[in-house]
Amino acid sequence: MINGVLFLDLKKAFDTVDHNILLTKLSFLGICDKTLHWFKSYFTDRTQQCYVNGYLSGKVQVKSGVPQGSVLGPLLFLIYINDLTTSVNHGTARMYADDTNVSFSGCVFSELQRQMKKDLEHLESWLIANKLTLNTVKTEYMVVGSKQRINSLVGDLTLSLNDISLRKVKSTKCLGVTIDEFLTWAEHIDNVIKKLAIGVSLLRRNRKVLKKCDLMNKFLLLDEGLTLSVNKVEGEKSSVAVEKVHSTWTKESTEEALFNVSFNVSAGELLMIIGPVGCGKSSLLMALLRELPVTSGSIRISGRVAYVSQQPWVFSGTLKENILFGKIFDKERYEEVIHVCALDADIKALSDGDNTLVGERGVSLSGGQRARVNLARYIHLHSCSTRRFF
Image (cartoon, rainbow, N blue to C red):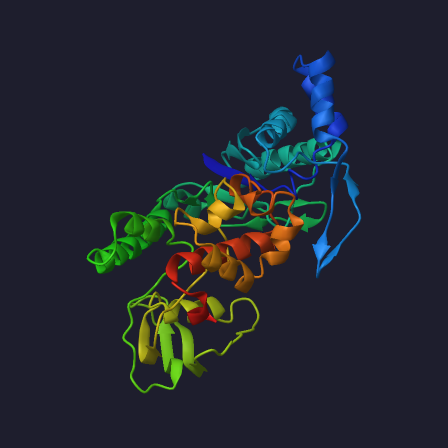
């Protein structure tokens, strides 16, 4: 037997819930009369506004979606997509919020492909009927089996929908776990070990100078940023000096990730690195953080280094709580952080200001707002004064 898995991705799932369809599904579950009318009043007749460059737009009625950041929002969405599994006839569907995957099994590629294609078409029909959209760019599929079984197979499995080819992957992240085609878990274990190694090293270097709660905060914020122990170079004109750096992905690898890179960044200078996908921008940052092995050349850093990941993390609390992250509130320092992170306009546009509940994974914030909150948390946590960063 050979197995296949579809990893589905929906476009703006929470924002495209149809109110009339949701009311029908609530009625089908036995919710009626005054209770149903209450639900209708809860998610209809809502308005939204945009605040850009000091200008506030007029109000526009929100005609679809569940209220984000609310307690009932996720529950209403789960009720809305609960019957999605009825469209799966050949596979087994597994759902968690808007993350859905469907697994299949067959003896040969042709049988597996037929099953996956049929259910994919049924799923699309269900989504269209419920006014949801499948994101064909992010929807993936993977063939799963033993290394011997997969290597012995003849041919390949391809899937497409509406003449758009879906992406076949050898590994993917599902609910925080990296799954590979052989189910070895090697890639996931490597990721966990790497994160733990960084955390243990960070705790060890700071154990004598920080309180226990500060050490825990540093460990929890590993994905948001790191503060490295670096020696300040006396008389050094550049804050960052990179000279003829060559780097590889691993110490054993011969393939170079960086080739003969040189540049200087002076104190207070802003440097932007621009290039196409795969040109080495992230690799360069990893080299500066000592996360990528440098085979030759030198990297000298004078002062502290702040790294804020491109995938922001926020927890289900208020915007203010996300920035303070357990630290004592200092009004002057807090307002300075808000200003340098360009959050002033965002806070003014929110009805409850910085006391606005951001919701699970920051669903009530835009991508840019989550990134700015992410940056503000790091600066507030790791600096006595933000001026040293700017």
